[in-house]
Length: 113
Image 1 (tube, rainbow, N blue to C red):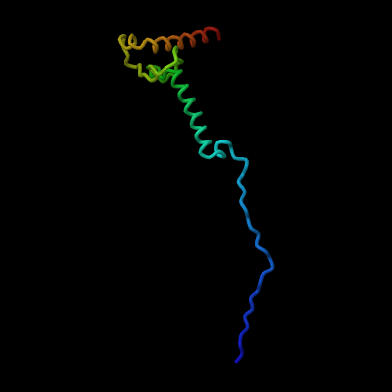
Image 2: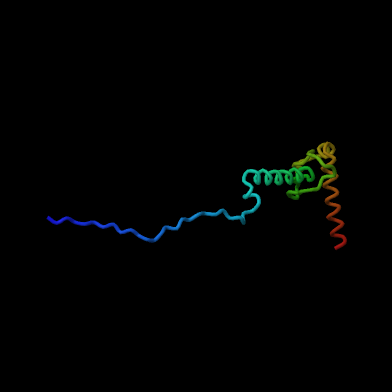
């Protein structure tokens, strides 16, 4: 009986190991991990607070208006003035003054155009 010979071929080619390097071109927010996300959150929160403290957001008969406040604060930040009467305007004088000042500014700009 004849025996079969099995030969194993050994390859002389070496396998190249691939190493993945992290890209150094990532933006600062992503590269910092949780610290970067914290900083980004603080910046976004600060901008939001600044906008809320400096503007009235009003729903008027003419539509939505964003009017600069006369005083810095959270009083009357959001208001629906479509159904306001005399008593409502008297209770919220800052809103009326800011809206009047905004309308006067627009009128003056149209006058000098």
